[in-house]
Length: 138
Image 1 (tube, helix red, strand yellow):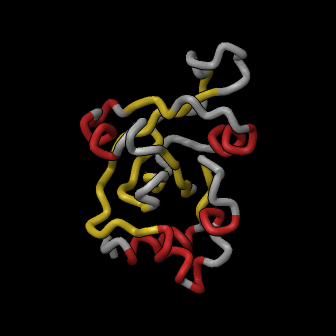
Image 2: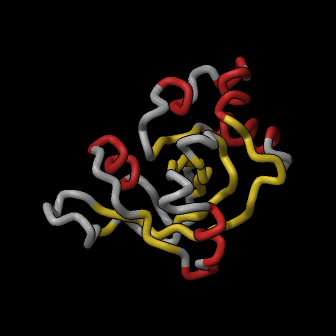
């Protein structure tokens, strides 16, 4: 299993909206960055991702699971980009802010710190465990 981080503006797609989709999940569409798309192509069913509210909030609020493989994104008229299906797994009891991530020396190499603008990012197993602990899951 691999770990990821998916960023969204809560005004566009929020954790509450994701949770309301239930077990059927929702397509993670609209990604138009080649590096982010390459990360999505590497995703497999069962992989987990942090659900990150960008914008004013800048915090990890939940965990989603990939339920399908990369496929064409019907919202992309060029036909170059795709989507994955994700379902809400659980909310973090304590959201983890970007400031808290940046303040942790063990997370200094996390993509969220090094390339904060990338909307779909890999997360190492060690980073995953630490952020889960910071969020009250371990």
